[in-house]
Length: 335
Image (cartoon, rainbow, N blue to C red):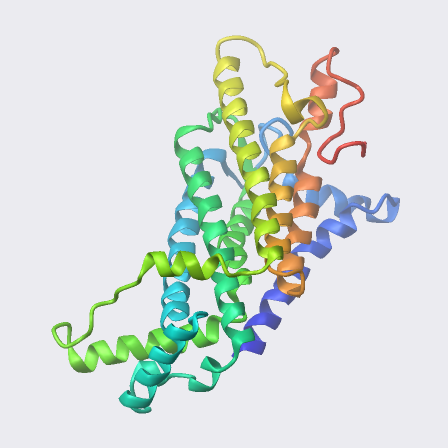
């Protein structure tokens, strides 16, 4: 099951990334294909008012609801599995191992006893918990911004295909961070549910997590995880500022003509919120240890899709004569 899920996710990321890469090739042979991809990618300022098969940009708020619910479910079940079955402290490990011996093969504590002896396996599970915590912080903030910060005009629309791609992304992105542990977590959760059905609520032990012990366990992760978390936080804070700035700019534009956002990364790129998104996912790659191909494919998709969708740069150049000509589109110092 692990191989099937990982392979499926990797194939899916390659399938959605490849068309963008092909459309980015500066060759007349791909002109028609490039126009087709552009119709799906453009939105807001670049989308033609008469475009068919589009939905209002505000509809994308629904996707963040899905992302929050799905990421929270993955985080809770993985954290519970890590806390009960993959403790890093030697004392907790011996307690779980003793419980496994006393309860026998049918109890959830005895699930995958062989995995309990692998320190590398336990570190891997807790590393995934950290990745899901970071993703939870990202999707929760984006959910808040979608409802209370972003001020999209009724004319701002996106293609329905982009909406469906966003739905795929909200499900596949968190899953890609934990796909190697999903089979174990699924079986563990399945055992808990089966035990609940057999014993009933009154005879089931309460689900308790020592949060302080969990924090101490996360603190034992390696330097890559904390450097990655710092990179993630750097991009996360900047994106929060940029989205607030853009939200105010859109609200101001309803009263006066469109304005050019300035300050911070706005002085070097036209779409700093996209650049911050790339920094965020670069942090996730580092925090994952850099050895997971699925996370790398997720990162590549983010870079290629955002780079192709950053039509704001050309719009600024056409709309404003005083737009800084030395400003890049999304990546600093790259036109």
